Amino acid sequence: MSKNISRRSFVGAGSLAALTAALAACGGSSDSGSGDAASGEPKELNVFSSIAPAVLDPQNDSNSDDDEIFLPLGEGLFRYDSDGTSLVNGVCESYTASDDGLTYTFTLGESKWSDGSDVVAGDFAYAAQRLFDPATASENAYGFLSYIKGAAEFYGGEGSADGLGVVAKDDKTLEVTLASMLPENVVKGLFATSAFFPENQKAIEEGGDGWSTDPEHHLSNGPYKLSEFNPDESVVIVRNDAYVGNASAVPDTITYHLYADASAANAAMSNGELDYYKYAPTDLIAQIGDKADLVNSETIGTASLHFNWNCKALDDVRVRQAIFLAIDAGYVNSILEDGNAVESTGLLGEKYPDPAGGSFRTADNALIEPYSDAALEQAKQLLADAGYPNGEGMPKLVYLTSNSTRGTARGEFFQALLKDQLGIPVEVGAYDIPTYLSMLSGSDWAFSYIAVAPTVPNPLETLASYITDAAQYGISIPEYDELYAQVTAEPDAQKQSELMHQMEEILIKEQFAFRPVLDTYNLTLYGKDTTDRATNPIGNALHNYLSKTSW
Image (cartoon, rainbow, N blue to C red; front, side, top):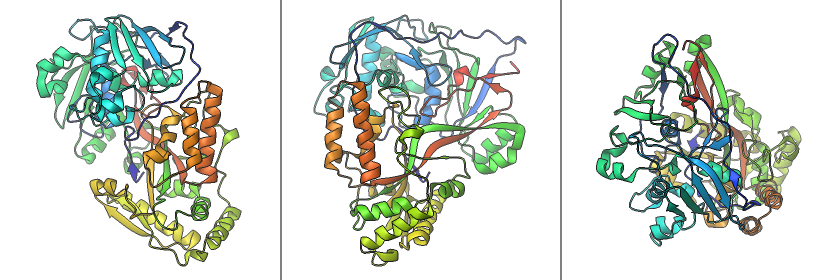
């Protein structure tokens, strides 16, 4: 996508569910750890990490792909099971929820740091304080501010750690107060993210600025621990013998290769030196043929052609609807994605859970109809009714993008599409990434193709990105804002679901605020002999479950 916004770049939003105060088991199946290979040889897994991390600090790392390193190293209150979708118990043993659904009290089970010391509730509270402390200057705190009571105030410098809703009552009891009620599955997903993994305060303070990349001070409570950090070369993790949880640790060693040169990574995959290559380029896929397995994994994001409501002409709903109808998502998919994506039928795809149960998006509640010639004729008439027949009289319209080769190519594609379909003249404005990001908040552009995904599988987090207070692209819909206020105060899960669907319908079918085009996905190459492949809903592989037939 022309701009793949970080999954942690949008403000999280609270929502509600009907929650009982009865004791609930944190649930889930147990996974048995693996033994040594029958041959006695170590089980070594080699993967390609697309971006070389400068630190290994889950509270201060905005690149969500680094979670593929963080997830085996730590364990939160919950974790994803080997199917990649089921949330099961991590450190949590049991929990209760208050009558109003705002306060959760978690009882912790046994968990050990890699030095053999106990993980306590205070380690979770400390991690949350690090995440939201303005002194940490966390790059990924922003996406979680609306989930936890006091987080936004603390992060913004108007509150303190004392007001943060993550409190250790004793070593085995953690109390969490939410900013607003959340569906139970969202709460579990929140505390399965690496940002809320516990941290050992003593080790961090003793390790100083370099603690996160120093195996002596980077303590782990997950199935693996840090063995080596070789800047711009590799990160090596090995089984954590002190781990007492239930997650599998199949490989003995996982090496994350940090190739600076893409051609070196391509050669390593072609030569069988890698078992996993995320975001595989099309030329490598063609070159490697059947020597590896190509896996197309749908993720929870949506790539949309966003309209800037601050731009004259696009403040007219007829113009937005015309462009909406003129976009042939199937054609976009075939040209830009080689047919690998799935056409979006709404802002929220089937990967989003519905608070009332099941998937938020089904075939029965699709909001976007397939492209047709009749739709194009309707689009042309709408444009003429708005005073722009065949695009005539349109003000200057700019497609904003990064100046990468792919970004510019996408800009030129949409430029040609809008001209061919509706006669709308579009200029392509391509800029370096910092300039591009800063310009998105202004009015000097009309279109930008942006992929958006949440920090946690929560439909309201994404919907909240378009309330007036979020200041996204000039979008302001009072009725939409009112529904958002209602859903954050509604305790019934079914009613909450109905309100969210109404919000999405207003955004997409009534106001045509932007045009969802394609669901996001990852093209990943796996070694032919790899098995037990698992990916969580955000799109990160769970490498601790990955096995090989040769082991």
